[in-house]
Amino acid sequence: MINPFDDTYFMRKALQEAEAALEKGEIPVGAVIVVEDRIIARAHNLTELLNDVTAHAEMQAITAAANFLGGKYLKNCTLYVTLEPCQMCAGALYWSQISKIVYGATDAHRGCGVMKTTLHPKTEIVGGVLAKEAAAIMKRFFVEKRNLN
Amino acid sequence: MINPFDDTYFMRKALQEAEAALEKGEIPVGAVIVVEDRIIARAHNLTELLNDVTAHAEMQAITAAANFLGGKYLKNCTLYVTLEPCQMCAGALYWSQISKIVYGATDAHRGCGVMKTTLHPKTEIVGGVLAKEAAAIMKRFFVEKRNLN
Image (tube, rainbow over all chains, first blue to last red; front, side, top):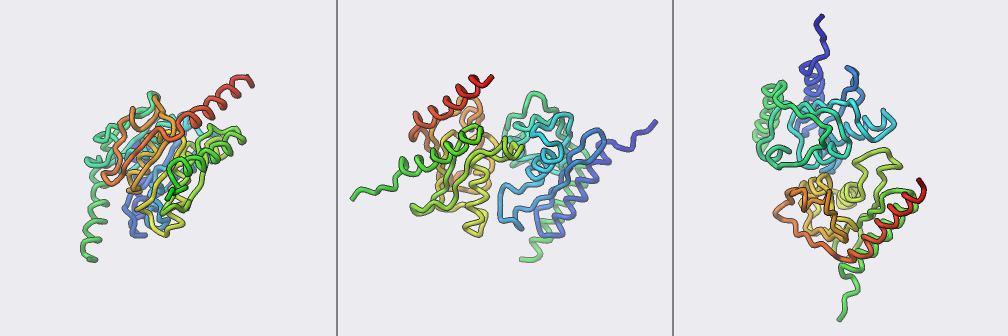
C-alpha cells in the first residue's frame, strides 16, 4: 500500500508556510513538525514583522510543538523545513533532541552544515527534499526585492 | 572619575536574574542587555516553566531588547550573561549583530567556544567577569537538585 504521508507530502506543507512568509515580505522559509503522520506545528519566518532575529520558522515551530506535546523534548518528531537550518535553529533543535530533520534547499553560507553546528546524537538529518521548489521560492523573494529597489 | 557602570556592575544585575531563575527551580542563568550604561532588557532562563528549550535567558533578552529598540539589530548593545552562551544563543546573537558579549562562567561542554559557533564579525566577546559567582550559583542548583532526589 502506498503511504501518502511521505517526506514530499510534508515538505509541500512547509512550502505552503514559506509562501505565506513570502506574501508578508519575509524571507520565505516555512516549517512543520510531524508526529506519526500528524502535523502538530506550522510556522513561517516572521523576523521582519516581529522585528526579532529569533523568529525563524523553526524556532516558532519548536515552541509550538512543545506546547502541543506538553513537554520540551521533541521525541518521535520530524521537522520539515524548506531551507537548511542555521546555527541558532540547529542549536535549538539540539536542545529539543528532535528525532529527525528534513530540509529542502541547502544554505551554502549560513546552513548548519557549513557552519559545523553540532546536532544531538539522537537526531537524523536529511536534505534535498523538494530542494528545487524551496530554492525557487527563495529566488523569487530576492528577485522581487531587487525589483523594488 | 570612576565610572560605576563597569562590566562588574552589569554582571551583578545578570546574577540577580540568575537568582530569580534559581528560585523558580530553573537552571540559574541570567542576562541583561545594555546600551550606553542603560539596561534595556533583563531575562532569566525559563525553559522548565515554559516547557520550551528556546527560552534561554539570552534569547528572551534579545527579543526584549529588539522590542525596546524598535529594530532587530542590537547595534551598540552589550549582552551580559552569567554563563557562556550555547550554540543556539550564539547563533541568535550572530543574527542580531550585537556589539559585545560579556559572560561570567565558561561552559566547557556546551559553550559556543568549545562548540565552535561562529559569531558575527562585528561582535566582541569577553569571558570570566564574576566567573566565580556565576559558577557558584550553578553549583548551588545542581547540589540542591541532587539533594531532592
